[in-house]
Length: 220
Image (spheres, rainbow, N blue to C red):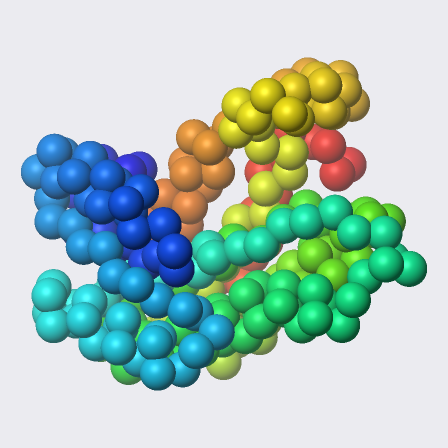
């Protein structure tokens, strides 16, 4: 929505949430820009190839790629299964790699931008999130490598949110506790993250390889 408000045509990919994706499309179109919802499994090369092809067919260009598919779960280290480890790495590392590779020729034509969605967990160790933290740390490094490898045509950056309050009642007590530990004395919002992504999507190409932490100072 933030990118649409800035005048961008928007494609939203989804894995299972088809109804929600179509609702987003309708909201975006009300802003006077074009929108598209496409099913895509970011861990599957054929699915990624089909999705990118559909975007280019629909809009005839690709300027900005926001790799933001994610999984999140709390698992104690001694109970963490290999399947859980592999699944979260597939989404957070394999996915951005595959989508970026497929989008590469189209982004080069437009001197585009890639914005990955990292996490404060990729910078700080959380004892009950070994697979999540490790995968996000890998994504942060992938961002920096891509920034070097794809310059000067493409700028690649990453937004790393801290505690973002999405209004979930089950997390209310936890969020209240985290807000007290945050220098800004509040948790982040979806709007905070969206603003950072919008900034990097329109920033000069000279800004590349950066991990922009959106955490209210929690990681300091």
